[in-house]
Image (tube, rainbow, N blue to C red; front, top):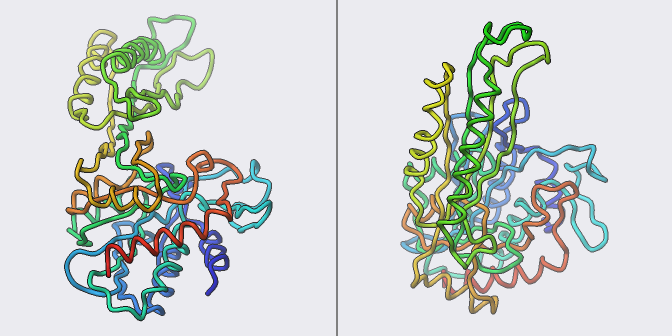
Length: 375
């Protein structure tokens, strides 16, 4: 099986994950395809189903013993608007020295490269196992990685996550807190404000509190290793009311905070609640907050894998503002780094692509990494 036809098959399988149930798909077909390829190469494969039967993780192992190396990636993609793509996002297109397709960069493209590197070790006696790990729902709930952490597997000494970093080693990333805020007022005829409780007006006050808190976070916390060296808050989406002549009975806000490593997300959540919930009694409305988070990550200062990646790429370890599955693999006891061939600028965009000139350097890097960690 050649590399580009492999990617073509992976791209063709819709594995969008989303918090929106109408967009959410399964990744099971991608997992089963990867498992069949790796089985044929002599890997021992385990498909780990999630609660949703359409979704699963894959743990594929070559060799045995303690230690070893995990090459990890997620098999799901973000949703896409096909009208904004020049080509069908589920059809791999080679053009202008690039491979276009949904997930080509983030991050289905990593798997054929990892498999190509692994092929060079099929007939060699590995002293430590090589594990190819494929997960579900990284782009929505991190449920695949959470399921691995709860199951306590796989076990290995090192893990490399092939997220798009431009082939530069990343040892640190921000966390992400996603908040869904719902304000329930009471609708009524707009001709008489006393007939209802306007949820949108309370939301206006709440937005002022959140923006003030955002400024406080920006002024108080800094880490110069990040290009954006402070924690950010993004007001992402808002919905409320249904007609100009009705008092707005409900208003909903989705926002996120990206804290720096070392910040206590439980304390941040508590502060948000302390600043927002008093408006419930003040205005007579009902306020609910739903919370989801992915921890920040920072490799140990003496990370051996960081030193190996730096020596193989001639780049110092850096930091990124996007979150990954690194905290969950670290929880399993692994020394984790993030490094992959794509660029984050191409991820989550129409006409996502992986440049052809990244393919061979990535295979070369992975081959050397496997040699260092498994032979």
